[in-house]
Amino acid sequence: MKSITEQLLSIISDWKGIPDKSAYNIREDSGCAGRQSTANIEIISKIDRPGIDIRVKAGTKGETVYIPACITHSNVDDLVYNDFYIGEDADVTVVAGCGVHVEGEEESKHNGVHRFYLEKNSRVVYLEKHVGTGEGNGNRAINPVTWATLGEGSYMEMDTSQLGGVDTTVRDTKATLLKDAKLVVKEKLMTDGSDTAESKFEVTLAGDGSGVQLTSRSVAKGKSEQTFRSRIIGNAVCTGHSECDAIIMDEGVVHAIPELTARSVDAALIHEAAIGKIAGEQLTKLMTLGLSEKEAEQKIIEGFLK
Amino acid sequence: MLELKNITFSAENGVQDTKDILNGVSLTAEDGKFIVITGPNGGGKSTLAKIIAGIEQPTGGSILFNGTDITNLSITERARMGVAFAFQQPVRFKGLTVSDLVSLAAGHPLERGELCEHLTEVGLCARDYIDRDVNASLSGGEIKRIEIAMAMVRKAPLTIFDEPEAGIDLWSFNHLIEVFQKLRRETHGSIVIISHQERILDIADEIIVLAQGRIAAQGTKEEVLPTLLATGSSCAFCTGHDKAPEN
Image 1 (cartoon, one colour):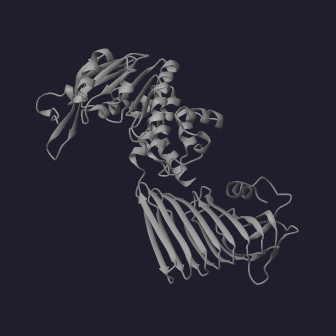
Image 2 (cartoon, helix red, strand yellow):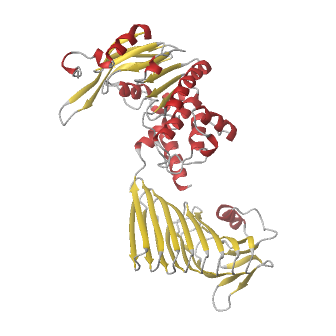
Image 3 (spheres, helix red, strand yellow):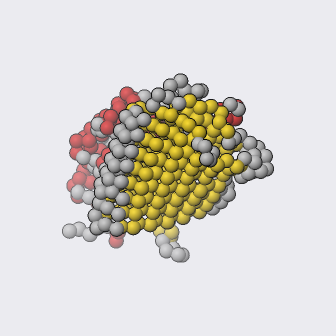
């Protein structure tokens, strides 16, 4: 494994060396830099396309599987398909994430397509951090696609963050929830310079008792531009809530485009969006505690994206 | 020691007009003294407090803190010199917890035990609050007490409280009197409180009545309180046509 990969892993997945007892697959510059399966979590290569299948046995409890992807130089165009099959009553954590390091003038990009199939009463916590590093002028692009089918009574929590260095991103998340399934998405996004970021969510609440909570918090600095699109479709007795909360600074631009579709009189769907600058009174308060204006601004952003 | 010399402040009142909020206010708050500024609404009390903290800049006059002219210093510079300020209407933050803010006020991370101690002092059941965001989920009274805790933990040579009693329940309010006295004992610094409350006026070393932007009365509580209490209104010190109508 390259040292840059290790550095990226420490940022995106709190990597502290090869885990003894966890399943993992480290993707490095479109290849495999290490893999391990466990008795309950099997990782196997796909035959027809780049990527892996991750199969979690029914009833597996408390295990974590790491599947980060790293790009360590310019001129890499990585595309991977990872499919997750989560057995009944399993309860696992998936640590994904991607780091793109560019020193040259040419673009590098990672396109990761993750498909989740959650069986009855299973639970998944999905953690995904994205970061771009390196001094090169080449574009750093990360385009994650996540499609999930949540079976009866299942639960999925997605905690995603992109906190700097990624020049362009298009995040595409689609989910279909069956009876009593629940999806919680917490997205944190910070863009700067001329970065662009688009985040698209489409959630279909197909089963009675299903529910989704989408929360996006973002900061757009410099001349960066963000677009948040959320579409919740309620086809049953369900609850859906999406919330976009953004801070704009400098010449940043944020678009928030919600869409709610109810096909059942018992679908309770809500969207909230708020975009604005850091409140002057918040800066003033922290300055009365001895922080400079810059320090206050940093602290407010840290808290907002925490 | 804090010295205000001939402070004036004018605010825009329409396109081409200005309104005088403060007209030549001079006062001294010696170390270890408890100064209470009272007076009718709109008399300039909160503006004066903000001017001391650097949140507003005076139109004229000067401010000396321990002999140094701080008139043109920023909020941050004054805070670092030892000026603490508790807002009348505390600010809410998304994502910053009680622990974050009280630790920032202390200037270093506080252990949970220390945090509990400070929050209990202002009447909060501490463990329930430490990890809570200082956002809209807190009531006005809760956030006010957190604001007071932040000012207390700074242990500054000069602490200014702008109407600390606002939004505080009776039990907590009574306890606050002890908290202020403890702060004075521990810091030996000056405490300036903007207040209308008789209980707070009663512990003052000096009461200043600010009305129509001027000091209308100044003295010990024995000298000032009887007039205030006799009329039941600080408007006893208003003059001329600005005097509030009697019912």
